[in-house]
Image (cartoon, rainbow, N blue to C red):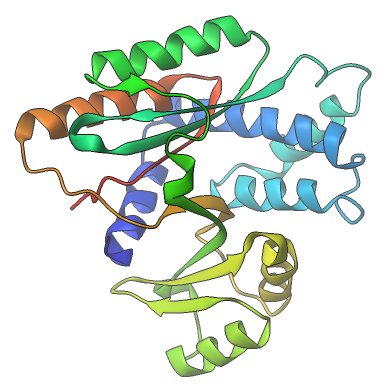
Length: 244
């Protein structure tokens, strides 16, 4: 899957309308709440998980006051207690693999909605672990070339010096991959030298991609992905469809 197409998808998602943006902010608000609860408090200096979610919030253009309001709210008694993590795995058209990560206060509702999204795209939810072995968990950072004020070789040396695993130059962007455990440290090191990130998060990267050529299959997988992205309980969706 070409890196520039991934970056094009990021830019496209950022340009979605205000309603979609509000939905993204709601989802990140939940992540902030859970990060405060599970990561060790509301101070990002001492809570690396919270720092990572704040970075994700900023790369999605969430205003600072909204971030701070969510953190403050999350610090209140019991505010994040109702959210649980749940991961679903399954198959889309043409044998595509899909992983869905959720944060929910009602697992029955979420399971039903996820199953419905797969069914409407003529796919199926599988058992835990049925497709996750096809993915690797990595830290992934995208830099928009327009925001980078150094040449590619200089940037590559800087990135690799931090201990990043891989550096790729694409048409409009640079992509940096890290071991998941090193992501927070490397992201912080890059922020400290003034690099602005278009996207920075832990993700699941497919080891093998699947091409879909049948228009019906493409329509169906888009249907599933759209339904999943519209669901407030769904935080992240990963798949191995080679979008062109």
